[in-house]
Image 1 (spheres, rainbow over the protein chains, first blue to last red):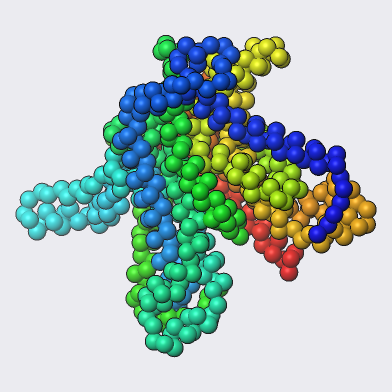
Image 2: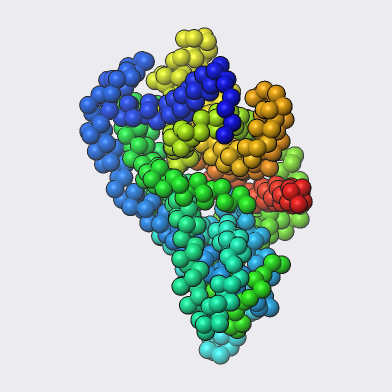
Length: 307
Length: 297
């Protein structure tokens, strides 16, 4: 342990850290204070920095006005769906890529790997069309093969086959397209590669089937990584914006982060910033709690992803 | 490709295991990507009744469109500013936190939570802070600096507002990475330099910073990707690309032209341009990462 006396630098360090924490925390602190005030207090310039006693009223007003109950429920379903979907799909995918040898292994890995880093934002319109009719590709193949003609010939009259199944305004539509991500698969692959060969050897010698090996050995070993990904993907899912904005038109199906901007006062309205801030606090609370309480795994997971 | 020396020889099981991932990737990634590329070579009327193949016309039109060029410039300015603010703050706070080892976890807890806040909510918080009539920071700017502050009407102010909202949210992410990077640097190196009489500042610039450069590069790439795409929420919730298109960054323009303007060909062409940009960034990143591996041998 190095001992070095640098009193000026130490003072500077503490002062900057405290300042940094205050600056980073200020927007939230300000929002919390605003959420406890009445409309007269919040629209006074400058707003008082002493908390009021209206927190409960403002929270319940924001809850009712923004229909937050339904929307928080939707957010919760979406975030958990994305989290579970991504983790399950990628655990099996990585297991297949690392622990088996088959002809299309490299092709499969390359196909998945190419999707790394390509967010939904760059392919919004076609993905939206895809979700509007999940059978679109099958329909195109059907049309391209001229199968309508064949079916009509068999049936003896004109038949137009149209395959349609829309994911718009549904939980499946909110969740499925966002589970197409290679990051988790990549992370599990990296992790599986570090697991000693002997474990698999031993399992095989004992006559364990691949799935027994997966459930009895691989899965328990992956628990820390899974915990980290739960935090990261839950926050990711909860905070999605563009996709739920596109795919939901029914206010009952929208998510809390999207619904929040209905609470923003427009220039014609009374300046209900206390309600808007109360709403913002409610909506940000679940992911903030997840990050704070699972900080250790979350940091581990974030940093692991770099490798 | 890397593989385990011992593996299972089951025939159909591996296909079954990878099937969900392949299905989802094909349906929601490859098919839409191909459709997007095809659409970018077509023009169609807003209702999609007729389409015409026009080769590169959409792209030529795009790069001759002053609004698009302005949007590129806006995006570069925006992501550049977000990167500078959030990286310098993140690095500064991380190197400070790394000096107080006993309090590192506490500091991290107090700095980490903006990461969990959605970009749109961050936008709303800053809209309130910088609101011309009610925002405390706005009042401060007016009273102390004599600025005529109005981000709802003035382009430069609006830009500053979305930069603040996006950078603030991103500081904690960068902080976590820099802190982890700093803690991975062997203490013996720093101590050796200290024994040789190098001051803390000299040690930072000649030892810590060069060793931190892979993290620095990674964080820069992630910040740029964040400000290119995830900042959509900030823009949509706060400025809607305004005032006068001054905050209309590329990803917002794709949405606006495609979903609101229903100019499908142009929107698809813009998506393809974005796709190329991100592929370029990814390739660059992997090149760099490979080089890093060679360095460390």
